[in-house]
Figure (cartoon, rainbow, N blue to C red):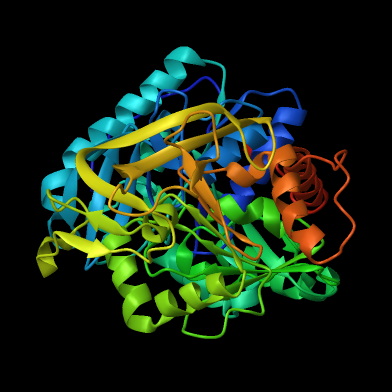
Length: 509
């Protein structure tokens, strides 16, 4: 039996474990955070280790998973990388970048991760927990697990599930997704694989994403409780949530909510896509229909096209070239299409990408440089150090307005003086944050390093109005409710639904 030290917080931490990935852990933590905030508590989200390329940057320039940042917003607090002390950013071929307390500390293969990073990782997790409790001794930690807590081939190297639960002696909830089917086997199998001291920590079961009349599951609820001797604390109905998926694979299942769209947006589904939460403000525009583009096709159906961020820009540029999408994007631009690149997407819109230090993982293919799509006269050079920072700037185009967001990227981009740079102009008063160029017969090609650019309501409305004007659509009202207000409303609705169907009070003692 593993002996493990324990931390004894003043208020009992809650931990959300799942029977599988995608069971609903992230949304459950988000909902609990808002419920406890509304009740006057001081909730703080925590996930010891997360694997995601959907990142956020805190005010100290530290990287963390966007899902923990969103949970912090739900708790009414400023996100900090201590809430997600280990972030693994996949680079393909079973290789990941390792982020400890917001800072890049190395590269690892999946095979060597346990040998090289397990003990340093556990120390970082303990350091973060102790720091949080030192600053907030009366807080209630709401902890999210990862995947399943009983992957038997990995359990000896699992930093973020039962090891954390035992260290904090947390009251744990087991969440399962009934939409996937096999909910009884998921619950019983997960509990059976736990050690007795681990199973004792499970204080309740939560059934997620139930469609139809909940009363029809009453017999199933009784059976689970009789079999496990653990109460079913809630059955959450299917909710039309609009939160970002946890990883890029879930993007394939993400549906646009527009019923009568006026504008159709195509987003290139890059193999190494990152920071796809950039598009949540567009998902929440009722007039916009979003479609993910994964293969070569005629792009003229779209009113504008987005090339998103990438964890492996050179690799994804090779994908665009080899798939034919690079040629499709060029053809779209000559047909007066509107194109917008974010971070890696901006870099790919340029003429050349150079990687002298193989920071893009291109050493495998011995690629020092690659031609970009060539629609903007820009040259990107990937350097040794990554840039991560919050941004406060002011836009020049399409209007003058304050801009907030953040940067996460390797490499610097500058004008390619070997090309005609006469028509390219800066988007922001900080001249290295983005550029745009107008097509000869209408439409624009633009790109920025700023993640979260579409969260800036005034800027977003003016950009969309450029497109709406070309389509002879009425311009958006400048008094449109802000995206952040919409996000708050979505979190409130989520918390209200959980409050109706989830008995949280028994977990708080």
